[in-house]
Every structure is written in C-alpha cells, then in structure tokens.
Length: 299
Image (tube, rainbow, N blue to C red; front, side):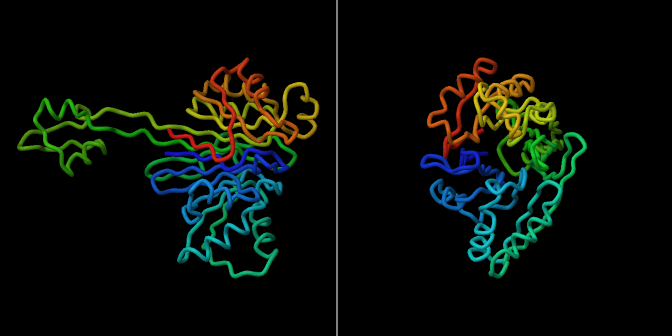
C-alpha cells in the first residue's frame, strides 16, 4: 500500500502547502481522506489518476476539508463511465452533499453513495476481503470523525517448506494461503504447516480535534498515525479555543497508543518551518516526522 500526503496546511493554503487531504492506494482501491481545495491539482502533481478514487472519508464539514469535492466529482464523472464512489462522513453529511451538488450547474455523472456515521466507540463501518475501516468521534467545533484503515492478517507460503517437501508452485497454493488443506501427489498438505501468518498494517488519521482518549483508542498499535499538529505548546490556549491540538499533544497520543510512527500535518500558516513542531513532539514520541506536500509513504 502507498500513502500520498496531498496537502499539509490547516485552513489557509500557503505557497508551500495545500490544505489537507490524503490518498491511500491499496490493491486497486483508492481511499481519499478529506478533499481540500486544490486536491485535484495535487493528485496530478503526485501522478494519481482521479478516477482511482473509490471511497472518500470526510472527517468534518469545515470548508478547508471539503472544498475540493465538487470539482473532483465533475472531473471523475467526465473521465469515467458511470463511476461509483462511496462517501462516508459525520452526522449532517447527506444534507451537506445535497447542498453541494445544488451549488452549481452540472450533470452529476457519478454514482455516489453517501453514508452518515455516528459511532458509539471505535466502530467498524466497512469491511472488504482485504481490509476494514473504523471511525470514532473526535472533539472539534463541529461533528468530526477520526478514521483507521486496518489491513486483515494474511497467510504467506513458506518457501522453505515447499522445497523440503518438493512441492512445485501452482494455483493450488492459493488454497493454502486461504487456510485450506490440499492434497499434492496423493499426500495431504496442511495449510498451517505450509504457511505463516503476516500481520496486517494499520493506518490512523486524527485531524481537527482537541486531545481525546477516543483518538488514543482509534490509533492503538497503528503502524502509522497521521495526526494534526496545528500549534506549538506555547499556543495551547489558542489550540483549546479553536479545538485543535499542539504538536506535544500529538506526541502524547502516539505514545499512549503505542504506534510505530507519527507523521505530523495540518500546520498553521504561521509556521514557515516545522522543525520546532517536530522537536516538540519528539520529546514525547521520538519516531516523529513532519509531512510535506506530495510526500509518499509505503507500508
């Protein structure tokens, strides 16, 4: 899987930073986390085809997180034949989407399925053969959600076992990977002997919130946590007033959740450089880095 950070600014775009959106590419599925203004341009610069977007996860309905939707729908509708998109968001999403689609004149050529999410805790809201999506409520000035992408554990073929037992490669190995025993040249081969388990990857996305234990629970044991760091701790009162987090608080979430890596984003325009934000988070969680526009992360 590959993650592309399409924008890293908070509300106001700068010369160096587009407002926030993140694209996850996984086995043909394109999942877009938020869709700020300029997202289409950022996708072009990153070499991502717009029609790869199959699912959109909206954290909340402030304009800097959704202003790119209308243009994206129009482009995808013109580029693909009856494209299907699933969009998930917090309470009020259906109303906002309806308002958005009636805000200008064009034919909606996208088969758009919209679902509102109202999690009680950390709730699973979608499952495929390969992964699951989870959400939880965050604490912002409007209804806001955090998301986790959780890849399912899988089984890989033990090549040394194949060599030892003189088993040739073939389509029957897929049955072993699915946990099914097979018969090879009259001999029963057990899946548990011929394969080994590989833990799936987990990515968590926590944006536009004050520090909350819900974020910690959502990100528990994540391989990668993408988390806002809008302010430094010397502006903690401003952060609280605007319902945002400091870099220090992002480090606290990463530490308490025991994630493997923390990537900071959603930076206030006041920070021309973000080294100080990273240093502040690293005091608590050393494996921290700053996102930058068009940054790619492979897992």
